[in-house]
Length: 228
Image (cartoon, rainbow, N blue to C red; front, side, top):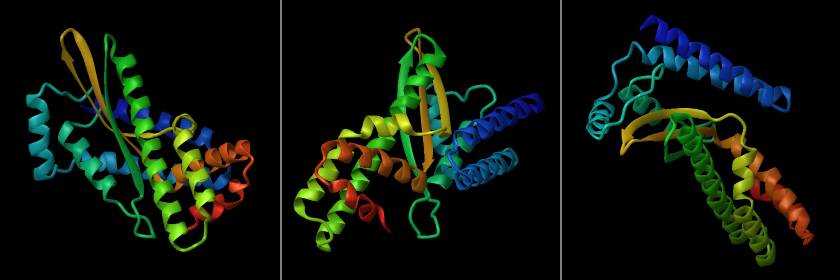
């Protein structure tokens, strides 16, 4: 057990360094480091904390379906607990601190199936961002801060940019990772998390570039759309 925990901590440390290397400025570096430290602390605490009743029950159902936690990962019930905690964590504005995306993929090799599942989960995150942008645009229209043409252009740009937003995301946090063998293939289920403020910041710049390519001037209003 000690070797498994040590291996998990080493993996986490590697993720911290990789995430830091992807940061573009000192503020982002500090945020990433703080977030990774919090997750590392939470992981250590989870190893010695009893999972909630709901997590235990759901974990039992997943096990009956053949799902397992990979070597070095937290047990299923504790992965579920972490997922619940992050899902309902709020920032200083009482908004969800993280956006969560889930996906499952099947392959002949574990690594390939996992990679595809993570890619699909990122795409789900990008889809959530596009929905969020649409809601922000609608709110600005109701307050007469955007014209109908500007709003339509921004929403279209957000929808068109989903793939690029997904590709532009830095290192994500894998909250859950399970697998099972079925029909001589490996199914991998993942749930990922990304800080809401960071993903919206990334999305804003991607959408801005798309709007600039359109040349209709709507990019000048993008900052207003993302204002809280």
